[in-house]
Length: 533
Image (cartoon, rainbow, N blue to C red; front, side, top):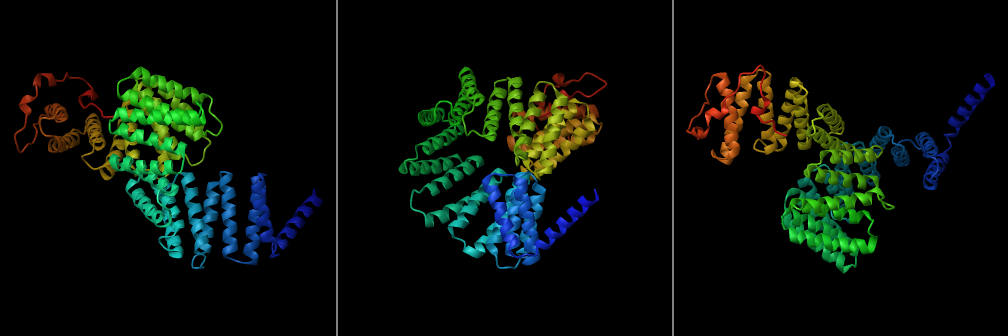
């Protein structure tokens, strides 16, 4: 064994010495790029790139060549799923270029780092990197350069993914302004911008502006003979009409798109399945349940034998949508099966943390509906862990998932855990949605019920009085929801031997006290409060 050790040691010394050759770095970097392009082993390409970076560091020192090489190192790490190593390489490349005058190289580093954080699921850090890159790009190129427009669009899409629609709208408007300045009227570029703006407006509930953008985009596509794109826009137009409850116009838009997709892409294409899902949703909303289920089955037949080019992410997203329709059709077991299939499809796809968490949360709801509370708890726990790890622990969505987790804990008699989840959900939803939002009020009600079960009657009464006050201010004293809250508070005050502290008269004479009497039982009855899902 001794000769072998000497040989290895001698080889390492030779390799270390060869790194001092100034021609070696560029040669190894070229080899790394060629290895990637040829589709050969990425591990081998990574070895070339790392050795190239060491050579650049020895011969040229910190600078542009080393930073560029680190971009390649990071890209190969990402392709291998080694995202932490990719982040480390990119952060080093950015720091190497501080004050160097190589602004565009630093811009590239920030954008690549943003993409890497996005793959990890850390959208806030991803967006921060994109914005840092945009600032550098604007300093170098000016604020109206077409390349700046592309970065603004990229940022708008990132904000949409993070559901930060006001910020997304700001960047999309900037993109439109720059493209209007540099592109011809009715260009394909402007049409793409308008489609994104329509998506943002729809997400904000601004349906009429969304419809205007889609119509303008459709006109541009017609002028450029882009039939498939026109059909895709027709689907989006149908979505807007559906949101506005203009069902006949929605059916017309969907059927128009369906005809084009069938003739140009074939009856088994995923685009056809997508329109089937939209029609299934529409017919469910209009009470035509048989037609709704039929369209769901048609879509599922297509996805059971997907056409070439259909991605796993696309199938998973569609299965999730179909699952929601089956849930609405009161078929939770079938909905669960579809969600489980979607989850399996996304397991090996990087950057899907939030999507997977959303599916797991929805599975938790399904498990809860069919009485499988431990399975619901496990699904919510998985979703919460992923959302915390991906920096989503301050979003309204996270607050809603916490509320659902609290409900599962209640069913498992983990009352202390339930209180913690409801308290955290309350804090998040107060900040993100406001105190009058229905989700926030639902958490208040659940927390009051939990405090009551824990013997914290005074805290429960305080919350219920607060809820009732807000509902009276917003809805009026005769609203059925207000009356429901009065009954809950009346029962709790009655048990505590108190009456409601009021400054003015109310409609308490409308409450039938006989119907509110409780049996003396050893434990609290959760039904009094009607836990809010």
